Image (cartoon, rainbow, N blue to C red; front, top):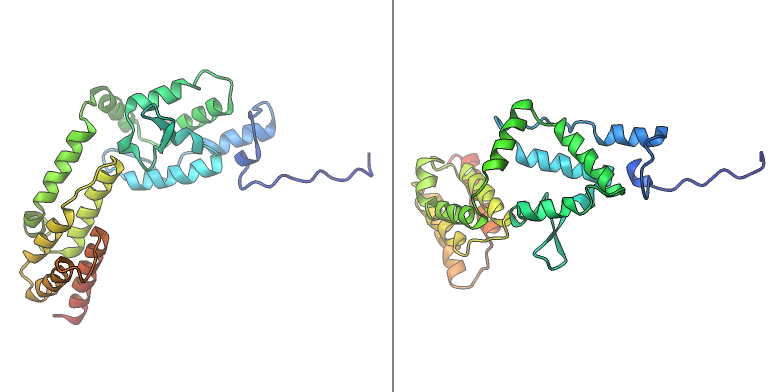
Length: 250
């Protein structure tokens, strides 16, 4: 009737999030949601020049607007606990991912619809060569998380050599390397108990006496309990002092 009040809209931050249950693809609204969710990501991923961080960031953003979050929460260990595939990928096995996917892939559910949207989005966001290479990688993947973690720890034990021979005593470049490797280790649910010591040794091996004198004082304060330090804090202290030295022209 003409006097009927207009329906009150349901608040949602994106079209996909406004739909609670199944998406009706026979409607204009449903087709629109599919088109939006399967649009290629802003970056095209290639193994020739991989940008894993960029891909994960864009995929995280898309998952929020497309309402895909539950697809990435993988049940692990048979305990009922879940881990976020986009953040904790190193702690989740391929078998756990397959088991979770198989639990809904052939069902008539929103989860199955979302899974296919995700597939279409990723399929349109990687190069053809990368698709072929990824298949080979998945077919041949055999290295365990423990082996990979062991390799990273061995790299940390050689930081004193890395800062001189590879980073050429560039503290910022050295820090970027350490952060990247440590991020990989954390993603596997692993940690290095002696990374702080390795960083101290590496810093103290550079030729800049002003820098090493500063680091030695920081280490003394840490060793005597006058100051607590995390890996991140030590890296920040080292880089900040290095930058100030450059500005001053010391």
